[in-house]
Figure 1 (tube, one colour):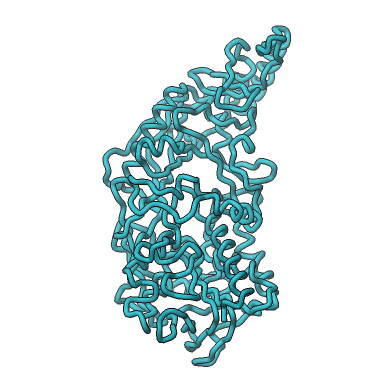
Figure 2 (tube, one colour):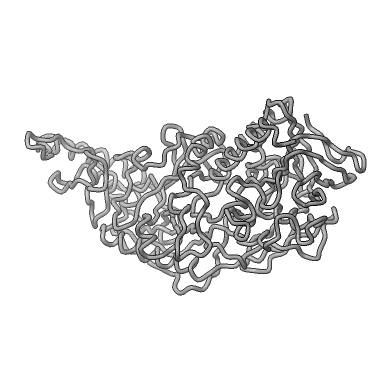
Length: 574
């Protein structure tokens, strides 16, 4: 059932068993898991079924640190939350988001990364990552490159030396912004309360149990939502705002006894910087794995990352980079010339070498200047050594040359199709080190509901920038060693460069830790010092890796939902 908060009388009390504040990815995931059970759930959303400008203005805020997006544009108020802003073009006129789990490294305590370490390892989340793939309606829970590359059409680059290819899958925003609306509103035990903002949490006299949520809406009157269990799922900016505004018993806000609420704000550092000048322009024809494309109907994309051992050896943060081919005159790359099209079949068979980093039977032709060209392996002789019968190769060469000339004429209007020089622009996405001075606080300005607006002080550290610089040096060395090209590095030093921005990935402001002196929530995502207040979403991340946070948000939300179901079944919600 849908309840419009604007229609409720002043000081009315809605009674429920579980109150979930925020109908974004985390809140929707938890609510779907609780649908159809024997207790009532109220899912609270500040916006309506779709985003609107007026409600969006409640997200205005102040930036006082490293330059950042206007806070109302970096989030979205409405059912589906910031899922409404996912904008990756994934085919079929759909927009979506990159999906990848955190790496094992991201959960570890690293002595060169202050405040690093999760209270559990990646193995704890793996079963939930598998379930998260079903929620996101994407492919299987597999990120092994061998499961996604096409050794002929889209092979991985022959990289070694601590540099590797990693896979991102993509999920559509449609499930969270549209499809799950019907499930939520049709569930007999769920009330979806729209146009309802959380103003403050009220506790009992001990301050250890939340009893009610004070709620309000534009053009409405304040009212109450009483519940046995409360789950905050409004994201890493609004959750600190609500906790810091809840000062009935706790003068500094709920969960803030150790001044940690709002601290450790993290983002992924996004930066266009540097370029790869390939040894031969044909490289652009064999980097299809590194563009958004479909494999078995699933949109995927390869990126280049540092292997765990290389990150540890150089004492860096986790890092990945994507490659984007462009002509040197600034235009996008064009179709290949006939010479490039013909190259895989025109090279002498004797120059083919087995790529030791690939699966058995996969061959890479070194190509001109070392550019890798995937070709089918010739048959093996009795000794196991692969050779190509000369007559077969001669026929292949003649056929390829004839077809390639025809393709070249069609594409370029010339029988020799000259190809413009190409470069690959680099788009970096890097983990940010946890930093207690990077934080969310409340400003003096108030919104139309009487709440203090938020102030973001996003701060970066030398390690954040040093990681991007050193990672480029390592990748550049490996590209050169592999004969792929030369990496031009534009960024030097440890000062944040112009153009460095985030990705609307807000994390870390109610971090998870066993010790309440070092975290806001415990490993079950329960706020330290309270018995019935939980947090779902990226604000609980102790560290953030480089992977987009959505898949981990869903996995943690599924894990929390299981805890809530167990709690309610045992009567612990009473």
